[in-house]
Image (cartoon, rainbow, N blue to C red; front, side):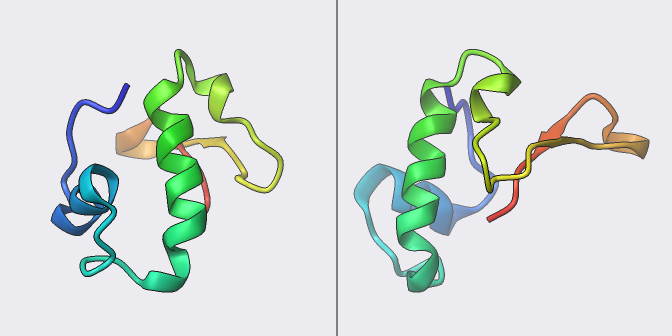
Length: 68
């Protein structure tokens, strides 16, 4: 479940579908990733081929990232 957004454009895209705050050519992939992220129960739920799920290191150790 998505709890919050730091990026207003991304939040607006997720909530309303508005592409004004994001790069429009990213919209289809972002939509798939946000829907999957919102329904994910654990990090492994985001391990989709091509999304390159990986664990971060340093100050963000224990957090995960995927590629757009």
